[in-house]
Length: 332
Image (cartoon, rainbow, N blue to C red; front, side, top):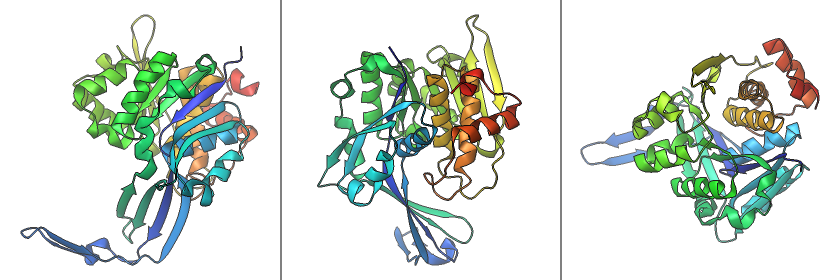
């Protein structure tokens, strides 16, 4: 049996990026005593991008064309009319299995950047909120073919349900709570950690997980095999416990991009690299290093799903960054 599938769970969303040529401070009026607020922002540009954690991860997996990818989620009827469906389905290795709600919009994130790089963000979940109704056990008939699943950022209820369903299906999973981390209750968070194989998040998110769960890294490693901490321009860190119960902490540097246009989605590119490494049966360390390579391509263009790269470029940048190429990657 060929075990080469990954399951991607998370958000599919449209990102609307706008710019404001002034300072938000000058456009806002707040009366704290009366609890009154007024703000008028006139954006001078607007760009639509395909986004969401699941979409961003799947896009990079599509470019790598190594793993067979299944995306499960919920979208609105605008998912097709605004071109997202065709955008993802151009990858032959990506299987889109989404529930479409004609009476709802696909999730959308509206981001306005002012002249000081301050951001005003409004997020509308729309059809994404219906992911909690999905039962993976009804959707997946061949769980034994999946190497890993990633349970990435969406509602707490959906992520909790998926963690339990993945255990029933015996599919190993990466827990990636992201910005919804503060919404988890302690017992719920600990329960999901017990059901997950790898925990990933940025410095702030991992700190929140430790605070809300009351668990130190050593205690978290009693539940998961590894903790991966992404640190933006400072690289990432892999923490794991070996078979002799010894804990290792390994710093992983970034791969230097040709240029930096936009860092949006770099972390999702990193996750696509990890999933690809796991499909290739690479070590978790080499999989993280591959994640750093993929993330470096993402930042070279504006938008999380606009970069283009191929496996030859990935191999070359891996060697230039780390001084070797894993045999599993060389043999692709």
